[in-house]
Structures are given as C-alpha cells and as structure tokens.
Amino acid sequence: MAEPRVENVETLIVGGGPVGLAASIELSRHEISSLLVEKHPDTSLFPKARLISTRTMEILRSWGLQDEVERAGMPREDVLAVGVGTSLSADDYLRKAAAIAEDAAQSPTYTYLCSQDVLEVIMRRVAASAADVRFGATMTDLRIEPGGVAATIVADGAATLVRARYLVAADGSRGTVRRRLGIAVEGPPPLGHMVSIMFDADLGFLPPGRRAALSFVRSTPGGAIEAVDNRRRWIMQTGYDPAKGGSAGDFTEEYCLAAVRSAIGIPDHPVDIVGVMPWLQQAVVAAEFARDPVYLAGDAAHVATPQGGFGMNCGIQDAHNLAWKLAAVLRGEAGPRLLDTYAEERRPIAVRTVDESLVNAMITAQMMAGRLSMNEAIEQQAGRRGSEGLVLGFHYDSAAVVPDGTPAPAPADPYRTYVPTARPGHRAPHVWVSPGVSTLDLLGPAFTLLTAPGSGWAGVPGVRVVEVDSAEWAEVYDVGEQGAVLVRPDGHVGWRTRSADHAELEKALDVILSRS
Image (cartoon, rainbow, N blue to C red; front, side, top):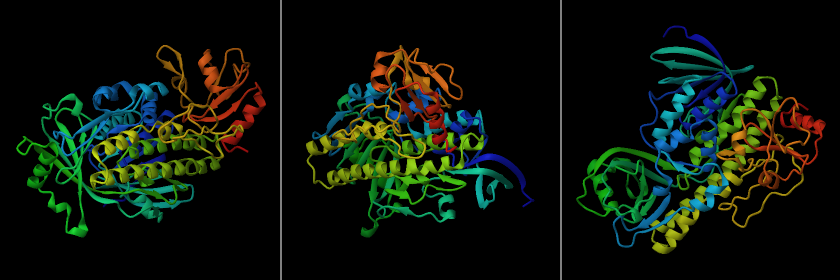
C-alpha cells in the first residue's frame, strides 16, 4: 500500500449510525469541520431502532427535519400502542394506546415511530450537505498524539492519515475505539441471545384494535412483533438459550417461517423472510465516557435493552451535548475544562436510562414466563410506555450549570411524570409563544437569553437576547419582570436570575464556559 496521504480536520467521527450523523450535523451547525467515517458501504438495511423520543424529535425539529421524519414514519395515532396475547389473532389479545393527549402538551412535537433504516438516510443526506461523510471507510489504526489524534483510514484500498484535534467514537457496542483505549463496561452479563426476524406479510386482516407498535406474544417461540412500516414490513424479536443447545444457526428460513406464523396465529399465512440478525441483549455503561481527546457516544458508551426504545435517543442526545462544547473549545471561547462536563452530565443520564430499560426488560421476562396474567401484563407494559419524566425531566449537575438554589421537581413517578421547570440544568420547557412557535423554536446553536419585554436585557453583547411576551412563559420560567434565563446551545438552562444584573450574566458565562 502506498504511503498514506495526510488530512487535517478539527473533529474525526468514527461511526455513521444515527449518533455519528447527529454529531456531524451538530458540529456543522456550530461551523466546526468534521470528517465522519463509517466502515459499512451504506446506511443500515435493518431497522435496529424505531422509536424517536419526544426530546429527540425536538432536536430533529431544530434541524428542520420534523415534518420530513413524520412523513417517512408511521402516524402516531395508528401505532403508539402496546399489545399482549398468545398471538396477534388470539382471543386473549389485549391492546392499550399511549396517552398522546396527556403527553403531547409538554412539547411542540411528540414521540414518533420512524425505523432507523429510513431515519439514517435522511440524516446522512443532511450531514453530507455540510460536512465530509465517507461510508465504506474503515479506521485501521489510532494513536493519541500531542494536540490530538492520528488515525489511519482505509477506503477503496487507499490509506489516509487523518489528524484531528478531537475524536468522537460513535462506532457502537462492538466498535474498536473503546477497546483500543482499554475502557471497560459496567453492568450485568448479557441478558439474552436474541434474533431479529424481519418479514414481509399482509396483516391487514387484523382489526384496528390489534394494531400496535409493539405486541408481545406467548407463541412458540415467544417474542415480540414490531411494526416497521405498519403495512407489510414487520420484525419478530425472539431468542435462544445456548445453555440448552440453542444457537443462531437454528434460525433457518423454515424455522423463522414457523415462528412468525405462530406469532401471527395462522399456520399457513403467507410470509416472506426478509432478513435475520442475531444480537445480544445487554444493559451496560462504559466506566469512562472520555479520555481526552477521545469522547465516547451512543452504544460505544452505553447499551440499553430495547425495551422502552431509549438507546438511539440517548446516543443522539450525547452528540447534542458534546458538539457545542467541542465547538466552544475549538473556537477558543471556552476553557478545556468544559469538555470534562460531557461525562459529568451524560454518564449519570446513561446509567439511569440503562437501568430503566432493565426494569422494562424484567417486566417482559416475567410476562413471557407466564408469571403475569394478560391483564397484568398489558397494564404493566402500557404503564411503562409513557416515559416523559425520564425523557424530558432529566437534568444536569456539573460545572457547566450555575445553580440558583431552588430544588428540583420531585414527582411521585419520575419515570412517567414530567414537571416543566426552568431551573438551571433542566431542559428549557416548552411554551407556545405565538401560533406554531414554541420557546424551543427561539433557541439555536448559540447561547440564548430569554426575558420579558422591557426587562432591561435588550442588546446585551455575547448572547442572543429574545424577549418573550407571554403570561404563560412568565409563570413557567419564573423570573419576574426583570429576570432572565440563559439557555445553553443544547437547550438546557445554564443560569437563571430575577434581576437585570449584566455583570452576573458575564460571571455566569465565565463559569459555564470554564473561563474562570
């Protein structure tokens, strides 16, 4: 192989799934150059994730992609439900829909189902329009050097030596970057050896009351049926036990056809097997999220069970948290200590998210083992489908947040219940300020100061000042007539005050950006 050519870039992203693509999009919004490399020649052909949480939908909205993703996905009203039964057509099948009317008021958008294979195509197009995105490119060597990293990238038989100030490892749970760094994961051993069977079948004979995003069936073998396009494409999630002699090799086409037909409940129903993918069900978190200049994100940093649909969403929010911090340091606007807050903020959220996914998995295991009745199963499963407290109510405690001494909300069910608050560290809450315009739409890739009209903050240098003329906003944000809320580029409140003290704002920015 010829001597590699050399390229220089501010940030190298390894991994072209949703998390790596999110990092690329966000860095471009902050005008930071990046190179994304992905070893596979194209985006995912298998819909490994489907659920897009409310918070991730808000991020997609900020990128101008909400409408496109909703057109590409499945209507909320049709599929945001869970079902349980002996099979999809069994008399004991029960279904319960999500509390859309209750939860939707908490955001300008809401949870959506759009399969990963479709979402990645959209995100790749957006990322590639502003940054260097290379599929079919493999990182074969990585060295930490003074001032950054040096990585060998091979594509089409040619090697390139890429030097970057920072590296974002979004290469998944089986990626190489975390292992090269010797960072261990913490958590229980694998929970199960799973197999995803993607199949094509017309399930139009099922009445609307039997259509759901996710249906658990106690067929032979038992498993879950997931809607991919809610028309002809579906996935059956099932598994095998190596201790009992099972293996992924058991899943021949004949076996898969029988398993799917048993789950449908019609022995001779026409079914075509599209693909089979073995995987391990895990619930682990990396012991470290960063070893400067390398930062782990997504499945490279944490792996949740699929129950709850948290994994991809948690990873995209990793990228959203990290990108603005990398940009601020690279532009010289922040001290390097700001980057330490990435792990300080995201690792506790990852631990909580993985733990909650494990709770969901244990409910499923009890149900599939027959230790819950169908009624108990549907109540517990449906009760865990709503997770806005986890998804929207999490908050950060780090050096990049200036506390104001107020206590955090303490709902009785912090998993299910979200309580809007503009307390520092929390996501800036949604309030409609004009028809079709949310407070979240007022934010951008810069620091934003939200305040009431005539409060004395207009024209303050260094931040975008947005005056909000809304009684509801004043009540939710609780800053009085002269106060303000400083919102970080990731949409989380960094500082809140009830007085128009410009010097205190400057001090707050110094603290958040590690300039003092």
